[in-house]
Structures are given as structure tokens and as C-alpha cells.
Image (cartoon, rainbow, N blue to C red; front, side, top):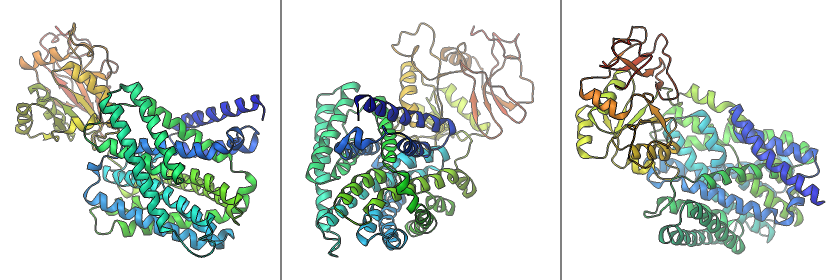
Length: 599
């Protein structure tokens, strides 16, 4: 290829990787639904989007290191405090039975469907046991199932990827060395050696990050660079010792950093998150471009049969056995049984191992990649198109009703929480000082755990069950900073009460978060008027507003909470419920609440 061809190929690959994800977000479908066809079409229609020619023999090594980075980022979101009780037992059983049943089903069907020897079917089976958070996560964000279901599926997808990578490497070495071909079977010594190397790499990675993030206390930029360098170096070193052990090192490092007390991790990692998203797009486009139409056509119909078996038989059987005698409801068990898409680890291991097995002369090895590609496309399409209606039919979709978390325990905030509860919302409150927590308890409002806000500021943390946050403390700088940090951990908007004018604080006037009640009704005004007797009455939207009252919140008929902010005036309609504030002593001449003077 000429220099111009290489530049065109790189530019087109990046454009497809980013453009496909943007298009998928607009269409509200998983990115994989767009990425795989885009890469396949580019590989078939052009001569420049071919990673083997753009990168050469180093492509498989780059894929391995890239997947290690993806798994490291996924590991940062695995808080072991959430893996407990029924969730832990279900996840472990899903992984164990998932590997055994899926692997066994593909090994049994492979020779008959694709005409490949048992060794090739074994390799294909171990590749297809993986799922992956890069596919499951976006699907769950689209479906919005209950938190219990989400935890199970995210943990399963994150943990089964490195397990599949280890098993794939062991099976590959067993085939290349002649063990499986000669009928000597699986090499358990290699399996445990791979785990040992990956764990050792994870410990080294953790030590390096402890040095850079805890001892040297690098900032966000240098800290992110240190994380990238650590994962790449450790994963590369592990892969030099044993193939694909870098995957284990990556996720072990991420999980350890996320769960070991004392790490000075940045609360937000915009560069790392952006880089991981770009890597996912580049990998899917590049890997799907290596699949040719000539290789797909002969295995298309047999692969459809295989996908049907995996979706309709294997996964439901695995889930039925794994969730027996647990606290999961029938609907939750059924939905878990209807969610096992294949993703990036399956594609990367198939591309890496199949090419080497073809060069090694294994009959049928050339069918591993196209079958894997079609299985990924088939499972993503099936689950992507049916997951949302299936979740709705099974009753596992979270209600549209807003569950707000009010942060702050001053008298006016507790009074507001009572009114929101009277409007039909399930309200949760959190406060730091014990006297404020006592005030919340005395009001009969559900009090969040004491460590909730600390947990919410951790990377990849999620405020489970919370769909909106209202920051109402008397510390405006805390409200401003928390509005930025907490945003990534809540599935919904974050608002804060407006700081008084001329605030001597550092960040409150300029940082993010929607300003509650508009720019005129600021915190000091609300506090003063509440002390003068103003309250938060609740009434149906059809009734006229009492004199001197102002609309603060509109609770829609379906339970969605829409506050009045500095950027939006909520428009009530019939069937809504209004939360007001008043009487406002300086606004009695304006009963509509259209114009207000803070007074």
C-alpha cells in the first residue's frame, strides 16, 4: 500500500468508528448494530480498510493490548461491595454454567453444522462463551431494567471476558502443540499457569498505580497517562510470558484499584473514557473489515441455527439453573435468560487465534472468524431489537416515576421533601451532620446510608434506584462540586439550589448543575421566606394558583418530576400535580407567578 492508501485507510477507519457510534446514539440502538455492518461493508467495498495491511503482523498484538485497556476500564466499575448475597451466587453460577453449557453446545454442533474437526469446534466454542460489558452495558442503558438485573448482567459480562480469554489461550496452545489434535485433551496446567501470570501482572500493575497515584499523587492528566502506561506495560509483559494473560492483568488491576482503600483515583476520567470508547469503535470496524463476503456465505445458514440454539436453548437453560432458589423474580430470571450478546472479546480472540490456526494448517480454522462475526451480529440484533419490549412484558423495566435524592437536612429542605412525597414521589434524603439526619428521621423521610455521598464520588459509582438529585445544602461550593461529580453516577438530572449573589466562595457561581427555582429564587431567599412562614403546598394542576405562590415542581401524571430551573419553565397540563412555594410576601400582586422579584 502507498502512503496515501495508508492515510486514507486510517482516516476512513476512524471516521467509521466515530460516525457509527454517533449514528447509533441518534437511532437509540447499540453501537455494535452499526459498527459491525459499517466495518464489513468498508472491508468489502474498499482496498484500504484492511488492518492486516495497515498495521501488518502487529495487529493481533495491538488488539490484545487494546482489549486489556477496555477490561481495565470495566474493572474500575466493579465495586465488590455490590457483589454480595444472591447477586454473587447468581453471577458465579452464570459464569460456570455459561462456560460449560455454551462450550459444550458449540463443540457438539460445530462438526455437524460447519464440517470442522473437533479441535476447531472446541476453539470456536471457547470463543463464544464470552459476553462483555461493552455490549451489555449500552443495551441495559437502553432498556433500563431493575438494579438487581443490571448488577447481575454487568458483573457476569465483565468477569466472563477474562475467563474466556484465558480458556481461549489455553485451547489455542493445546491445539498448536498437538494435544487436542491427538486427543490428549485440555491442558489444565496451562490454564492455572495463565491465571497465575495474569494475577501476578495485576499485582504489579496495582503496585505501579499505588506509586503513581498514591505516593506521587499525580493529577488527573498525568494520573491518566500513568494508568494507560501501566496497563499497556503490564499487559504486554504478561502476553510475552503467556498469550492473552494481559486480559487478566488488565481487569485485575482495575478491580483492585477500584476496591483497595487509599487510592487517589480521579473522580472523573474523561480522557480515559473517551479513549476506551474510541478503541471499541476502532476494534469493531477493523475486526469486521477482516471478514470477507466469500467467507460468510457458506456458513450463513448454519450460523443462524447455532444462534437460535444459543439464544433459545443454551442461555435459558443456563439461567434457569443459575437462578434457581434465589430472590430474583420470575420476570427477572426470564430477562437474564434473554440477554447474552457477544462482543469485542469474542471478535478479538477469534481474529487472533483463527489466523494463527490457519497458518498452522488446522482444517476448518478459516471458518472460526466468519462464524464468530455472524454470531456477534445475530445475538446483538436479536437482543438489541427485543430486549426493551421483552423487559416491558416481563415487568422488569424501572418505572418512569422519578425517585429524587434530596441532599441536605435544613428545615426548608425537609419541608420540601414532605411535599414531594405528598405529590406521590418516593423521596430519599441524605445529610452529613447528625442533627440534620435526626430531623430527616423525625419527618418520616427515608434516610440514605451515611456513606452514600462518599460512594457516589467514586469512579464509575452508581446511585442505584435514584433518578434525580437535588443538592440543597447550605454549602454552595459543595453543591456546585457535587453537581459535577455525582452526575456520572445517577441515571437522571442533577440540580442545585442557586447560590446567593456576591458569593465569596470559589466555584459555586460558575460550575455546572441546573439551578433550581430559577435565577431569582436563590438559596438565601428560599431560606429567609421559609423562616417567614412560606411553605411548599401541593395541588392539582387544574386549580388556580393561590395568591403569592409560585410553581417550583411539576409532577407529571406518570410520576416524572420536572423542576422549574434557570433554563426551563415547566408547563403543567391536566392530570399533573404542582409543588408550590408561598405565599411570597413581595409577589402578592402577581398571582400567576409569571414574574418574580426576590425582594
